[in-house]
Length: 221
Image 1 (cartoon, rainbow, N blue to C red):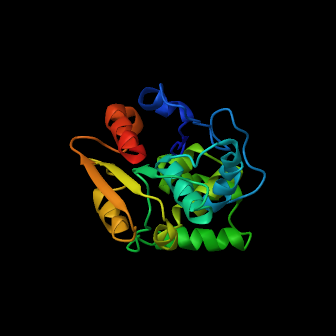
Image 2 (image 1 turned 120 degrees about the horizontal axis):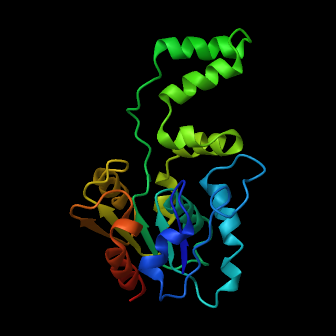
């Protein structure tokens, strides 16, 4: 099994759910003990990195992906269908919402002035940090560019290409990736089960490790 963690998290998130299971739970590049990538890439680029581990398995491994790690798992399953087994996905932003609000006009003006060299980079960084998410504020440089790229990705094509069975395990109280996203994604997957966990939020691996383990057992049965 390969277990892939969420943005800003570490492979240790899976310790309680997979402690007695033969699994790899690496820190993805840019997180924990892994160095920051040299260049900007999306989930597909991360999938290429993880794919290097696949040849070390005697059998096609189960992929477990939480949030950002689930993006990578979906790309991996679509790109290397003959090398991966079932998937267990939880809290993954599989589909990009199209009703996102545009930035305020004042910010767009400042952004234009910054490109024109009128407003300094320091001033723009202050404005970005005022408006950015917690994840955005926590990173700089290449990792911020990776984050911006990834949050604008959507995986309709990859979901349709998956031939492995998929278990979608979602917290009913996930405010970051609502259950509605999981239901829409399920309609695009050929072989899928959806389970919703009452009273659980976004971080299923640490909030509901027993439920995650049951989902893994279901995937491999």
